[in-house]
Image (cartoon, rainbow, N blue to C red; front, side, top):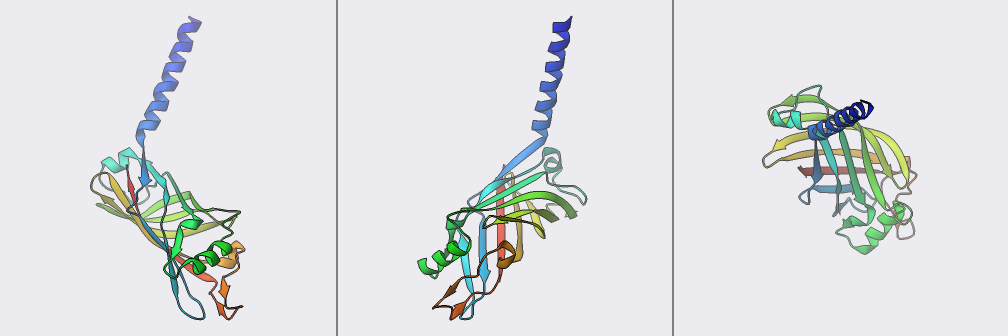
Length: 200
């Protein structure tokens, strides 16, 4: 009898685990995604392109199968990782090396965003707006951030997330890059713009 009860317990725990797994859909960030980092300097504005973006978005299969995401619903988990040395400027290696130095690339080779809360504030067929809250880690320092994201349900089991976020480098204990013995200085504020395409 004890063995039978133990069998039933293990069986129900296994079924519950499989049920939870089946209800969660994981989408990975595809190569079609784009991200830029832009700022200013005393000489000219500048923009760098992020060449590598990895990570995932997890949400409920039930929400996706309905074909739309409604106000008040949420997206379970998001993680976005950017290797610092995948940030490339059209202005060449000198600019890139200044960027890597400011980001402390040798000690902290990745920029990471981890979702904390992701609540849909506006939802309709195929499109939704998300208030995204989470932890952003840059140059080894982590801060709580919040910003709006526009989302879309696409064909072929894909979704897109687009938005932007402005930050002050000094908030992350970064020293804004300079050149020509300090005659050219970059502004403290930079803007990250992104369009993440995720696929199931």
